[in-house]
Length: 286
Image: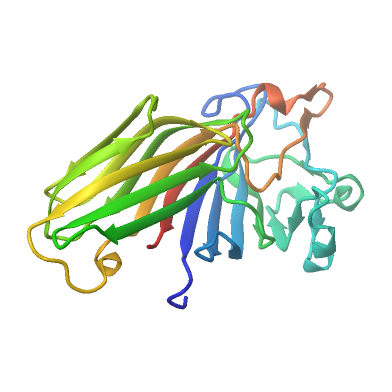
């Protein structure tokens, strides 16, 4: 990346659960992990984006019945479908399937059939490189405020729907090693938030209990140093990192629409599917 670009790297997992695995049961359990990488300009424009994901199944079904699993009907595979982007379709660059999966009807109605082996296995691996919005945008700034002082501003914007709430949010920012003190200012009325200066590690820690989609949160910090500032303070600070959990959120939009066991009624996945998006590495450089 060139110096005038801001790089954000995002990796998080989306989990879908149907029933309870580990014992013989009447329906299987599904796990859908996704690893996301996003690079964007400092102004927030996305430069590159990629998702690597897996639909993982854990099955201990009595009698080993055949399973019919349906994905999005508007699912497209291959770069030739990129012109459909913006229409709401799910577009994968490529994918592959477990040896137990039969694709007889996949091209017609996007359904998979399989007799799952006991245990856990990947039903489908997929990759997506079309542009998508990351769940959070981070804007951060550090400026000198005197020979021995500086001010930090960190703004977090949630760009997911207002019907969704993220929780257990933690934001950290390393500071210059000669930082001796930090005082904080939160927006009036902020609830469930706390900021602290970890003197041993020389970093800011900002904890937010929950963030509703569409909202913004800002932290201001005033720093005091033990020596006079020289050079570019931004080079000695950051990057800003963030961890979070977002229940019922799936960035790729690839979903299991229904699950059906042979000679039994279809399961409505909404009754059992629980999507949870978690950040493993979400970093914005100053």
